[in-house]
Image (spheres, rainbow, N blue to C red):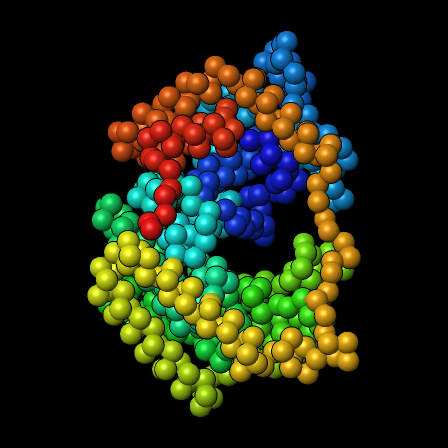
Amino acid sequence: MDDAKKLYSGFDLVDPKTSVSMTINGPAPMLVGYFMNVAIDQQCEKYILENGLEDEVEAKIQEIYKAKERVKYIGDLPEGNNGLGLMLLGLTGDQVLPKEVYEKIKTETICRVRGTVQADMLKEDQAQNTCIFSIDFALKMMGDIQEYFIQNQVRNFYSVSISGYHIAEAGANPISQLAFTLANGFTLVEYYISRGMNVDDFAPNLSFFFSNGMDPEYTVIGRVARIIWAKAMRYLYKANERSQKLKYHIQTSGRSLHAQEIEFNDIRTTLQALTGIYDNCNSLHTNAYDEAITTPTEESVRRAMAIQLIINNELGLAKNQNPLQGAFIIDELTELVEEAVMMEFDRLTERGGVLGAMETMYQRSKIQSESLHYESLKHNGKLPIIGVNTFLSSEGSPTVQPKEVIRSDESEKENQVKFKEMIQENHKEQAELALSKLKETALKNENIFAELMEVCKYCTLGQITNALYEVGGQYRRNM
């Protein structure tokens, strides 16, 4: 929990203007639990400061620790960080505040906190490799998160970001990315409904995440996604108007970045950003040009940010809400891409739907096949990529080596290990009881996330994961 507090401390997490996104998949339920507890504890700290309770709370903290070593933040705070949340580092608000006060703060905080967690286990099996639990158990926990959100009126936090970005990064073409992602979304809708949830209670908590590349189909990926989603939600699931609205984030294509003529990557990213903005994405991430070879530097990140700033503040056409509306090529592409996606839906249906197709690794095999096709075209020159396989520089456009690689130093690594050990030692008794109750909750098929909200106060990520392995099983890929 201290790791999460270090990461998020300093942000007023319930400020309506503040939104936090976490790209977390395997341990997503635990990380959401940590995040929510951090947000609650930050508001507990604000309550303590506003009511002049510092001395009283400090005395309680001293009593709690006694002979134990107190967890403290080591080093200087990052510039602009006000340290909010560090007062209760290693503890939780319910240990120092009256129960009724803490519960009131908790209820108000989780209703207002904003953010997104990826948590999309379906695309993990299909395209990536960060699954840690069996798919059935992972789906159950995804449903538990959403059920908890409904019961506790968590309206501003997206319970899952249904992701096509990683499907595209693994090699899928635009059609497969869109078809698989939407199909995964409908699979979640079907599962949540089967658990007794009302579609209008959970659909607004779903968001999507797509990649943008250089192919023409990317020009209409958002339009087609919204058309298909709205039709299905309205006519098939009888959902209300709010549930019919698909919200999506676009990230420019990491796969289109190249280590040769690396400066050209900003040009590609600019064009992809324009495509996303013209397609009315809800939010946009522009990649740094040097992500092809290393962790972005401060200079490259500033350039990536400048792409969005210049488009939004200087480009006149971008100030029009929908500049491409009515263009022949856009209308034609929209119809063609929608038809192609529906054909892919048919192929999934023939294989037993998303989960049935996953049993035979249909999605993964198709993604790998499309990736191989792309790489073949790139290497034989049939797909021209400037500075990579055509229009090379006089030096032959050699691969660029990174000038700077950002890594944690040894002291930072050692401190994290020490913090983990201190947390485990300080909460040894509480952790044992909490983990036992967590396993019992899972075995009884009750809401695991509701229990995680308590377990995350005392246990580390490794402790929780190992406990859930015992009842939910570890992920094993079908061969």
